[in-house]
Length: 339
Length: 144
Image 1 (tube, rainbow over the protein chains, first blue to last red):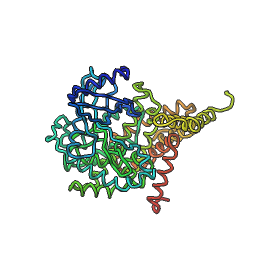
Image 2 (cartoon, each protein chain N blue to C red; image 1 turned 135 degrees about the vertical axis):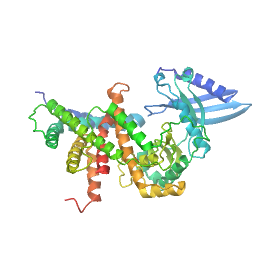
Image 3 (tube, rainbow over the protein chains, first blue to last red; image 1 turned 180 degrees about the vertical axis):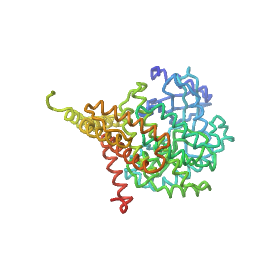
Image 4 (cartoon, rainbow over the protein chains, first blue to last red; image 1 turned 60 degrees about the vertical axis):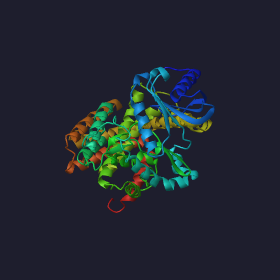
């Protein structure tokens, strides 16, 4: 990513917002880069917008692709999916503007409302402040997920979403199998056993819906009262809604709270029940289990990919490097699930 | 022959400094990175201490599983190469469906579990311990 002076970034951003929102004047204050987000830069700022003598102020966040080599249409897609969710009254940030023109800020980005709150799952699971949130969140997350799966892609013009075909599960397994073959630097018999297990148990897709694609507590903004917002919609696609249900049960999101399989917060049974109540659709435990095994395997392959990002020198980082030694955690969980 | 401290003693000293001095002196993303650094140094220290016997027993177990004579290897590099080579052989058999069911599946699962647990003994022993505790609590009767 070419470096841009903060002053230059403020100047360009001000011009962009003024012209996109047809404001008379725009003032940006306190622009700062937020920690984290290896695959996406996150900037936070306060924005005062004046039109016809009326001034409004909003706290905003800008999500930008890390480099010009990575020009894709994904920013616009994510923007449109979040907007659809917002219109369906799902708790997400309000999205304002999107740009894929590298002349504006060097790469694609979009701007949305900043939601204040906590995102660190460890705090949610350990701090007294969040005792109430821990109680209410499993049901909230099930209800929100049911709403996500009700989003009508046609109504919201989400026709860019990839079609999974008749067999979303098989499509996903094959896709990750290919990723795995490309990424793995050493043999992983536990993953091979998991792939065999999955291929023998591919479930029939009961419904085809919008799938969030990364629905886990790490992508939830919460407060002491519970869920405030669902983030990170870039992996949204059409497929089997049970994919999101299984992903929510992956062991890595429990942060050691293994007696509560759903994000370290609750039982599978309660979560499935709350989802069924909210969606009116039954959760087939066998299908959910398939997607939980798949989710663990997918996370394991992602850990290999993150280590490769470091090993190949694309992004040198001790954090990414260390994740390579977490792959074995997933292997152990997979053996527990398939034995 | 190098003088004391040993490599393990040096690494543990460095990791202690990061944990005790750098972690409390930083916050946010940097503090998280500091914890990662200390953790990485402790992984390497455990690997220096434990890799040799673990990879030796892994090579023996893989050879037995695949019906090979146990190779007589001494250097760590040779042992690692043998483990990787037989690991590839095993994954090819799994991909071909040879471990889908039948008696051999049980043997494969046992050897693979042992290898994975050995990786965790170095990478994250606490994870392994808590996993064992959960499994023992879940099935108290049948297991001996």
